[in-house]
Image 1: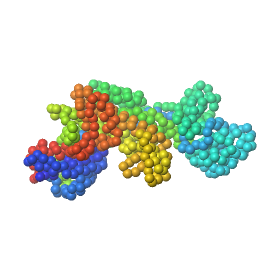
Image 2: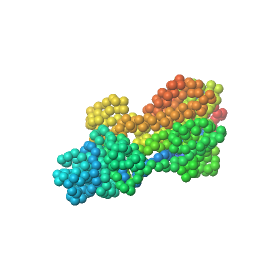
Image 3: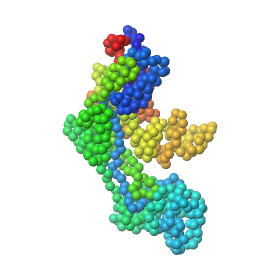
Image 4: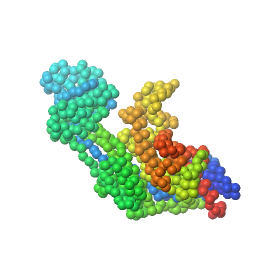
Length: 613
């Protein structure tokens, strides 16, 4: 009887399977398993810590020690790594304080007000009939501000709106004798130019502004000519969807839209090369990529965003593998169209405008990975013989075949954090495999950037779990519209918020976005990465290139555990008559542990015992 360990080092997690092997009876009994976050880049000696932690957690469950083990088999890790960077295509540039594209949570009042910007302490110097937009800095109390505005109106001054530094808009409006639009939370209020014509607009709750989000509306208010109207178009466009906004006219002010040099991609393949500009969008980039398959390398135009990104990826891999840059090739990219909240330059309230961007994931292939170094160090740490055993794709297939109801020919989709891998085995045991850029990490990044939450851990939770809206302290409404009631009141901090329903808690999302918007962004990110990649992968590994020529697809890996990714892929592949579903490794593990299981199972294919080795 021998104890054999299979170790699968993935991009995101390191998994272990331990089997009790009886070679005479050709029988394997799996007794424990472990999982731990991968430490360092996959295929480097930094992985040792993750392997040891995963192994320790597995052995602890069955009270085994290193000395009880006979052999550790680690996967011959495919020398590829995925990296993601977002390349912004366009940016709206606002100069000379021309605009505050500001949309605070709680503006006050309703309507459109036009007047000249005046500090509240200077109102007493104004004459009856003057039309004003009052500027209220943070050191002025809301009650005092309301008193001063009411006095000014009584004296015949037309106060048509106000801009407030603190979060006081509603408090001020509630104390006014006449309704005016008031915008608050303007951080850099001291930068607002004075004695300039300005317009303040606030829509009803649930509504959006319509005058300041329309170029002709702004042109009417500020009496602009056709040339000026062209210039303010980016301003109007970026205000669409806001509940409130301020536009200020300054003689020096100029608004222009310019292209950031996103750069060109040069794709090298067996059939020649293709050059494509990143700002032509994701669809055209992917079309160029597929036309030139198989890809040998991808380079970016020097001095541009995309050139810098691809150079960084190669340099990182060069450092971790101790190889020359010339030996490191980018074998695949995935481009996704998205929107990025760009900070408005010259803005006074840290305002943002949504701009088009292309997200890029790159898959790097090196000539080799230092797997032998990992094996030697692991053997030194544990005192157990370590061998590099089998190609990763073959091991994954071996493990996935333990899913009940599967048979050859079939395909596995291994969906991890860094890459989407696929392998096909035919009835004659021929194996075809591919490794594509883009997986779970890219989905998290797309969610993080498009929602503008600036918190990757929170984006990861949004990706992994369903959402709900807390409508009262006693009930929530789920994404599907169903309602759940609670006997005990929920925490007050959750009231009115969109929350993530994790296994143990409700996590509020600090954003203004609605439940529908967040779930839409999440699903679109998963579709753009996983559904697209599953189709790309299948077309590459199926000898005929026709997805209809296969019957079974088994989804394995960390992303196959996701609550909606397998359904999205299954729905798409069902259009081709393919049976697709989550793997259930060894009928108990679900989609995890396929490679580690395959490493243990394939031990029976080797000859002789290792007891004395």
